[in-house]
Image (cartoon, rainbow, N blue to C red; front, side, top):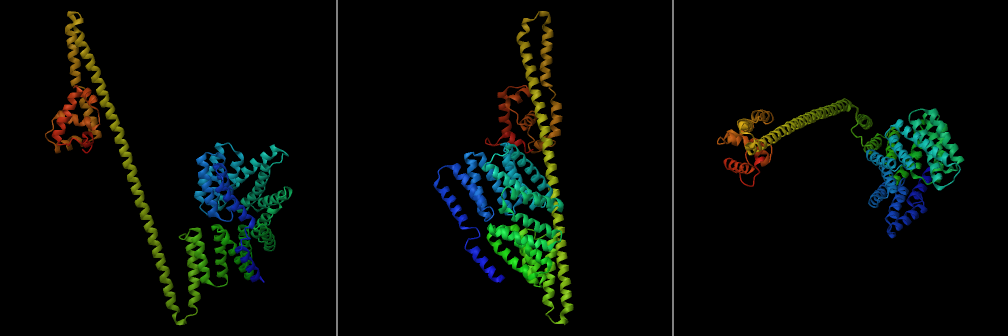
Length: 548
């Protein structure tokens, strides 16, 4: 009987009835609209609709059209469509179990709705975020988001009063699902009393607002709740009712999920034939849904089933498929489970061998275990050594960066001091020249005072705190003078002074002010210095001096 039913289900899925002819016609109609329309806004909005329709049935297609919608919405600057397409991208990546990418897009959608001050769009994104956090087992975060969303939407409906609109109907549906989601959050937190309260609110609201087609969620969740409190008879009753409702809605994803749960229920009760029937049904629908989350649960249940009936080879195969889907092949828990299935499989095979081989088999088993332990230990040591090496490299880079920043700071201070000398010498020179030009205007008896002042100013130009500059320069560039002189012993003191200023990449005008000569004289000195350094004309003198 059950074989016949399964055959019918296969034909049902292969013929496309699982999604319905109306579904395919709607998709084809929307795709045709995309081709025919020249309005980018209509095209982007249609992409959003196609993505949403594929959401539960084909995650790859849903992601493809959400991406197209987002790119086109950004191109035309349609803010509403940017927000909705970001939300669709996040939900699609969540269905593909790529949760980090999903969170990135959903947080972008949340920021966008806050920026646009769109409370309704914000709640839609918060609901999607809560769904991701549930899958990451962050149930308290999911509960906070769902509760906040419910309060926002209920306040909105209260303000609208009895005004009926298509938008209000959509918001009422979101309120309905939030009752369900909050119940699930409390269930995941093992607060079963609160979970039951919100599941009942969901059921009453679905009847009150005429959303009876979604009551299968109530039966599904009450089935989970009954199973959790070990009321297996009631759990089976609720799950069967949920299955009937989901099949009426042609919701392949929910059919697969509920079939999985019923199979798990039967496994717990030891009803293996019934468990296998529902596992096969779940497998049938999982192939059409292509969801990693559903496959993960399905492979785990298949593994438990085959382990229970003693077919350890199949159990091992399904366990490996489960690990592959969850991307956690190297976790300790999964390695222990694989090792357990390997031992069970080897033991079952060896029981058929000759008894005199028993001691050899046990010795080989011990050697294999020791080998795995050694390999695992070597791997751990290698990881620790790698982490230590990475830490040393990062520390070295950090210290080198700090040293470079300190040198740059001192270099800037040195340049500022040199510029201060330049400004000071320039001011002194101007004052000296001004006094020289105007000394005849002073009384004759004061001429000796003017000459003395000019002499003092000129002396100050020659003794302009150069020694203090050199001391500071030595601190910042400690080996500069020694390295330069050792390679070019023909350099004079004036040449070395010129090199130190050029090392700071100072201009000819600034250098002229510091050493109290004219800019053309600086250029002549630079040319003479190039010859002593045997430097080609195409090479920058300041850059060359940074090598010392």
